Amino acid sequence: MLSLHIPAMESRTSILKNTVALAIPNILNPLISFALILVISRYLGVEGLGQYSLVFSYFGLFATLAALGLADLVVRESAKRPQDTHLLLANAGLFGTFSSLAALIGMDLLVWAMGYDEELVHASFVCSLALVASTAVSYLEAIFRSREKSEYVALCFLIENVVRVALCVGLLLWNFGIVALFAAVSLSRLFGLAVMMLFYVRIFGRPLLRYDREIWGMLYSQSAIFASIAIFSTIHVSIDQILLSKLKSVESVGIYSAADRLLTICKTVPVAFASALLPVLTRAFVTGKGEFRDLLTKSLGYLLVAILPMVVGTFILADRFIDLIYGQKFAQAAPVLQLHILSLVPFSMVFVLAQALIATENQAVDLKINIAAAIINVVLNFAFIPSLAEIGAVLATLLTIIIFNQLQNLYIKRHLLDISFIRLYFRPLAASLGMGLVTYILREWNIFLNIAISATVYVVMVVAVKALSTEEIRWLTGSMFKPR
Image (cartoon, rainbow, N blue to C red):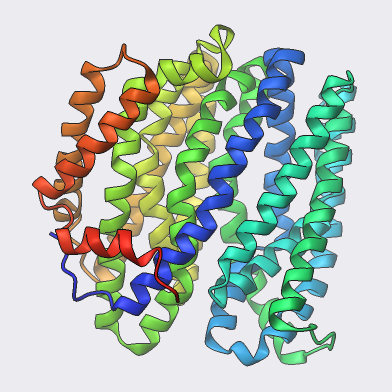
């Protein structure tokens, strides 16, 4: 059972509030985007959804390269020395402008060289124009995260996404194609940057647009390792769709992405949680190794309580979710989703432990593990996709993330702290499997009623097996509404 005395109340409340703030846009955005995905699937079909997802795969890869992975460095340094926030933002922004322009050219050249059809190439060119704005947004978001003002990030992303979806749906209804969609994507990203900059000025004041040699030296010296971490991390997460498009077809990308988008919704919780955790872990490590160990261990336990029921429930109801959201023409995505959702558990552990490595300045280790994972994933994709298509891509991703997690665990156990993962998993897994039995029995019921009953059963099971104590549940529910 997770005990209440650690981590400290203030730290836990801060993490919870910032997790909720960061999760809100990532949960609402896919829900708002449902209208867009629905229109794309109806107007452009499986191939159109595949084109849309494929361009975003390239964009995600080069957006990572453009930002050089420095957002986490900005979070860490701003959390350590908040007095230099303005200088960090201004110098990181200028530094990132040059890398973004290089990434823009690189994305255009690569997509052109891959030999896709002309419409997809043009769409990619238009989408690449958003790279500079995306880099600036990532650094602004880092500042808000470091100062634990993530609710402003949530609001900004929500506004931007509403604008983007409205523009894209309107263009599709007027029979515009994929190129026009990405023009709307680029314009909405610029709009989002403007909104976030307004929030920044309102909360923190005007940034100091002054060159700082020390900050540039830090950014330059750290950019190679942080960029490499981000790039190799993105490769082993995103390369599957790119390889699917070349080893199979764009239609295969459409089937795969239908399942992947639902997994992405589930990933919002661990991603938001880990993002909120980084500045707190950084301060805890400075305070002492004992506080750091307690904070990390309890955080992993809370995360498992949150994600394991998602995995079990989605595995059981995968075909119902696919049919409800996409319709029968995407039925092939159901077994893809069943296998894909299993990766949520090791992914969540990987994401949090990566923040722990960065907080303890072990980013070089994180880089080595990411390089190994990227190589493994590419090899497995080439091995599995030709014969297993979408299932092969998912299997490659699942095996890669499991290996990644085990490498992290091995290093952390030897050099930082020993975490008993069996103890962490046991009670939340027991509660999730108990819930899963109910979900399976009710699988033919109305899906929303099933989810409501299953969620209620899960809460009861969590208390029954003491995955969380009643005091912790009272804190988790009550602290969301307490003023900071």
